[in-house]
Length: 174
Image 1 (tube, rainbow, N blue to C red):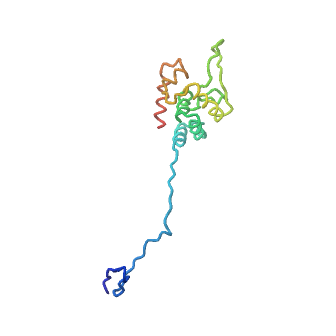
Image 2 (cartoon, rainbow, N blue to C red):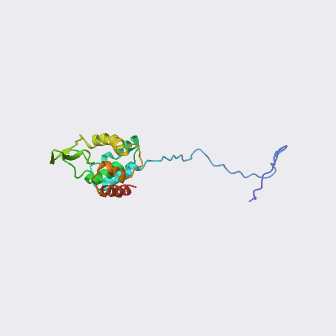
Image 3 (tube, rainbow, N blue to C red):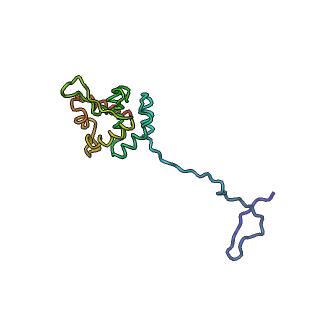
């Protein structure tokens, strides 16, 4: 067996063909695996898993919650955290109200034993109607407000427990 020799190349004479040649194939680029990486927004999945953990009827609204928070420029956790604080994620709401956020639920001024209840046609309807009002009335353009600041207008009689609860649920959704 002859030992392979190193090829020599001269620009005037070309390859030295007096010795045997050993060739190696270059790697083929025909069968390369092509991949692409997509960055996914995990917020809807975080919400879905959180709502599912608590068996909330809001599970199908996970993507809508993120969509609305983006549209109205507020933290995606607000609507879920408030629903958790106000209604245990929609498990304790006035019958046929779809009102998980305590939105417009208050005692009748002339008779405190009668409750005024804002009703919605569905959870989707509630979310679509509440989201723009939430940012307009409670955030008032300051989209970095913390729960204590929002509590002052959302539920003024609260002693701070509302904000504490919302803060806790914010942390659970990270």
